[in-house]
Image: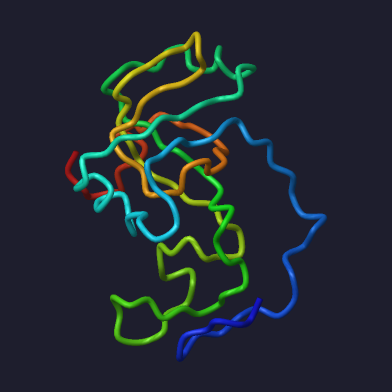
Length: 160
């Protein structure tokens, strides 16, 4: 997919490896966002005041045990509508092209994104929970949920 490049962008030739690692989707994110109105990042999503819902496959309902309302969690999700071939990108907010690994863009070889969100509601019987905000399209596949822990997730030297 090398069409639609901006000046300074470079795309990887060839498709991603179809026999690469296998992931098991655990659910989907229900968000208020679609093409054309999705915030560019979680900070902008929070500014809108619009929350979202995480819906798990019912098989994973027991895995919600121990989570509580108000707790921060890290969501790992698959940006299934993003490009996977860009090596350099020219976002509108920077002056010059940058390597994909120097950006938080969803366009990357493996379109895994992450957001640290706060649980606003919890419904283990329905295998779902509310979150304060998210920056992905409605129906985005969910890969994993991890508790956010200050003792582990704060970079060294940062105040907690």
